[in-house]
Image (cartoon, rainbow, N blue to C red; front, side, top):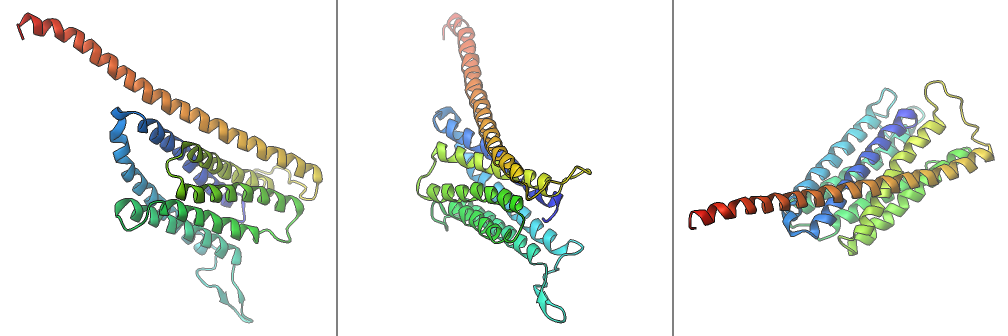
Length: 272
């Protein structure tokens, strides 16, 4: 993860999850108010199980990727002469992916059995995010000023998501909390991209001065722009889902009305 693609790939993961959640939670909330879409509600358990399986697979791939890159630790934590720790940064990232895997497993058990209490999936997602934030907090000590600052803003998004998940353990099916979590997931993803571009400029771009206070001021402002973009994407997706759901219902109602108009004369002419 200590390179450009190492930040972009998890950034893509969180961004895709944020986009998916923006559709899922919008559809879940809108369909809850429409009896004609009750079948959508019944299928959400299968969706949650599939989502949990995706988390398990991505968590496992992340762990193996961190361990078996060419200079990875290969599951050695302590070795050599004299004995020393082996690639602790890779081990920290593997720990983050481990808790993502556990969160996915809890999702599967929660929605496929009755073993887990209500809200356990949210609780475990909050734990997974907390572990990520906790490890990152001690991941950036003794680094240059801009490096620490840009990661500290990532921690803001992470711990805000942790708080939201823990509230959702007790407050279920609240559309505001759901959509706020969507915004934080998108912010989490796009900000990882931003970290990659700042710390590891690709394609021969000039490097950032990590001790320039002006760069710190710009990055702070840029974080707000990322948050605004996340809110905009969430609002647009919610609007599109609402329009498609409502539009589909109206089209269906119009079709039924037209069929009704044509069927009445036919039946009346037969004496039925």
